[in-house]
Length: 456
Image (cartoon, rainbow, N blue to C red; front, side, top):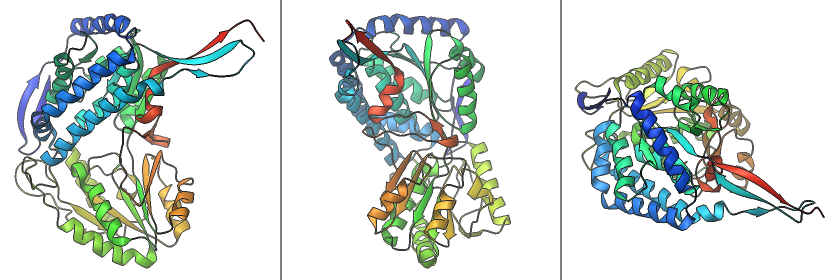
């Protein structure tokens, strides 16, 4: 049984039963039947469906946004923006999938040789709770435009969001079985990955979840795309615009109450500007309003679950005990719900808990670097490699430095974000494969070589 809990109050919302084995079998069979027809459709027909789904999302923005606000605590202003971003992903692939998947002529000894991109079949998407609509669409939009079908296993804490996504496709006139929402426990997911009908897996989640799914997919000899956790470094160099850096990094750190894989996690500041940056950063963080995410003025909502908040507080408490200074927050608030205050830890050094572990909440960690070289060493001193940012007035130097950052994406003098037009993904324990952009759709196709004789 999936039981959703309102993180603002800590009270249960609604319950949804798991699908039985027979129901899962029927859904898999429906996905296969839909694939046989969908793979034969043209890009125009696929695009028409994705465009209709996007329009329905935009027309129903308020209801869909409030599902996120109630089920996982996303501030309503951010939730509305997520609905729009998910719609933009559907529209992007509707407009560009055909070009992304165009056949490529390659010279050989053939009269004509080329590569074409063909659909694989049913793609299983295993999704987390922190961006229920956006993460679903960055998986399903390219998969469907490539001619595949989707079996979506969403997080048990956002069951109403998951149902709403599936209902959008039904309302837009999608063929039965094209995209289905499966309510499964972890044991059922393992069985589904092993099912011959499933041809690939896309997972967004923790490194532990990624390791488990990657092992299952590898055992079944199936491709997987994994977007996992991050401990993202942000390098603030001595010549940086400190006001701009402090403003943007404050937003990056607290968006979605800090529950974002690509949020600024470890802010590494060159010594000559360390104190000035900390002062500016603290002032901006101190103005942020924590409260009911349904209120328009709320900037920081609750943590999604009580166990996540407990772990976050453990990380903060241990880091303070290890010698860090706490300039803001750091204490569990009284009252209902799973709120955690905006927290600023300074004087953090290698080996401390918040330096080594991913902090998934509104906790900013600032680290002093003796030099640019020292900052780079600490930036890469992590098992993760999802995203990073560099702040410097010398843009050419920052661009050159990006090649030495061990991460899947680097932002220079700007916020780290995901964009339907650009590939996103990580290295090291942050996963492999790419989502979004032209690269994202290639993870869900058979790159087939065709050789046409006679030989030349």
